[in-house]
Length: 151
Image (cartoon, rainbow, N blue to C red; front, side, top):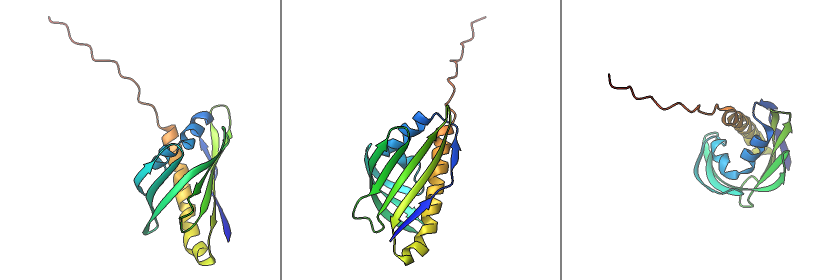
């Protein structure tokens, strides 16, 4: 049975194009998925381990849809024990955007009871991680130290 989980909406103080470009590259997801390890991936797909609650789960996912500037969709590969689709939705403003993550999972009633709160927490942390990465100040270039002239 399909179950939909939606994150809160969050303002990201970064240009929407930068946010979209970051999310559309699966390689960047290693920075935003909480509890990730054993990462192997490229721009379009990834294989990794992720901590879900007290357990560690292997995951394999690939980007299946890109609507430039607005939405990216990723799907679990068929071997997943809990097949899902996850959408990253970007509502653009001039220099900021509103970001939301939605997830649709095939879950039994027992899985829904046990896993839905875990998945909700995971997508909320992913949202906050995207915000943190995108709003991280760029290191200002420091001028080179000036050598003192001999007296």
